[in-house]
Length: 468
Image (cartoon, rainbow, N blue to C red; front, side, top):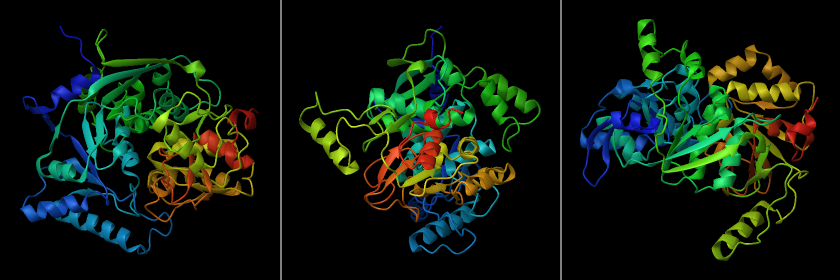
């Protein structure tokens, strides 16, 4: 019997038709939409006189362009207001479930899907957003699509896709003190580069990955895109099942037992072959931070920025251009650099575990005077739990500002922008030029490192600040 990977098992079971020498016609179980990439897709459906094939398989929420203050009031920005209004109109017209601003389950699309239990093992999931890969943490094939493909899925519940190559990244051993899943993925990307997984779908494995909570696994899969991968996934296990069991859309009663029995079959067969494999030792991973303008430009917080030695031509020019944008010099330490903003949020690290971690470490402390500190929960549910657990009080006493759910300063499509030339240490996923605002300088790090920076006002190894 042929040994197959988890990815193969899910992919092959969803192929409706294989086109010889072409892509597969691929069935999609769940389709998430938001206000930015859906309006044109719906407009084209209307022009063509086509409806939505299976409205119950689509779930909507506004997140990218929404303000994170005064969400109960009319949105001031005209484009944002129009996009949100269009999303409401289209969902009403086609009978699509909408978690709107102000409702109990509003939030970032990749946060509310798992929270509601919509995201389940063995599914195929798409959204007009690259970080759809987040849902792969549940043992699902999840990836981002473009606007024309959003239209295709709405109309047919299928998509045309060529099957990617398969990569396995194994991390074995125990994580050290102060090391989080964000550090794991930043470490991996720094080792294989921001293009190192281009053309692949990645399965994460190994004892260090298996030891992670579901929220930590989502952080790992979320940033698969930052190394060029089509997506990432982790085999479901008891941690997955325990997370899902009480969720609103999870199977109930006998259906639950049947679902778990199936989910337990979703794992890579021993001896299955991947196109490429990497192995890393958890003991070598330490708190990480980026210093450049792509997520592969990352180092351990305690280390120095690399030099241009050994680089030639366009690689050298790109490296030096990146450092010039960031205001850094080759070979200098990042530790001790003064920072202006910290941001905790996004679909990478805007979950309750992230906010708990920051609150625990800043309890009884104050943010540095030079720091503006934003905490943006990934959903109304996260916001509610943060209030109920007393985390908001701790954070506000430390000088943090809690805002309302949304993508916020991750991508600066809203009002939450980092001013030009200012440094932000961010729990988000991208540090491209202008990603958090025109001229903004972004350094990616874990919630613990962000907490340490907030308290000290400069780049700091969290293990040194919170050793007690």
